[in-house]
Length: 324
Ligand SMILES: Nc1ncnc2c1ncn2[C@@H]1O[C@H](COP(=O)(O)OP(=O)(O)O)[C@@H](O)[C@H]1O
Ligand code: SF4
Ligand SMILES: [Mg+2]
Image (cartoon, rainbow, N blue to C red; front, top):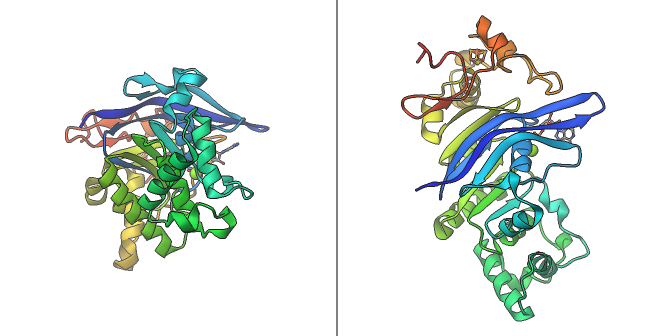
């Protein structure tokens, strides 16, 4: 397995009346071919910003300040529009957060497939279009006969989400990126979508990158987890290690709060305080106002994401240089 995506020092902000929101503050991570990577963090921690910066879909007030996103050695951020269009959908497909709302209520499902094909300059006959669309709908366990000619309003939330995944798969991408694919759904539908993604991963040999605020969802589906706190990756490791031996104080807090559901209440240590404003984030380590291990250096210097001997990656002054 080689690397398929390498994100290097991605920085993105939003311009607002009050100043700049520093939403992605130097994000770096590698993605292996055919792996499943989960980007996990609480709401407003910058997960969507990372995805939007990577896929160049930031909103109008978003600005990409620096960084590289290498896809098989090609920097997506340096491509011109035409080169980018060739890669999107065909090689890298994205299902954005709340994409269900982007389905046009006046268009049938088949017309959404038609639009996608046309936007990529592909000349399929009507018959070919129906055949390809049906094949993809079957992959997400939808009955093409029932769905192809339906309007979005006639579909449930879970069905719409599956239509969006089928659409994203239409041009057979190598990488599928999903932003909160299960969040707007009820628990049963959520687990159905997770199972479906697991199966797709197996049958298509696809690389998945997905965002979730729910670490349990990440655990079920991912090989590796990137834990995001206030616009930074604070820890990146295999699911197994993150659960067995979390390193960063924030990840530890996160873990003890989920483990606490069935555990001895006296051992619960919720993380005190609230996530910081990204308009005026804390200096140095952005977690320092909430960290019980805070040291002088933490207030001044931002800890880099270090790779430890066993391959774990963590951004915290407790590690490296005489630490672990
Ligand atoms: N278009 C925007 N304009 C201004 N601020 C934004 C915009 N989009 C997101 N933000 C802010 O950027 C930060 C990160 O947001 P986001 O990446 O959407 O987080 P997440 O996906 O983890 O919930 C938050 O503080 C959010 O309020
Ligand atoms: S760098 Fe310092 S403040 Fe930040 S998590 Fe580590 S110990 Fe805590
Ligand atoms: Mg989001």
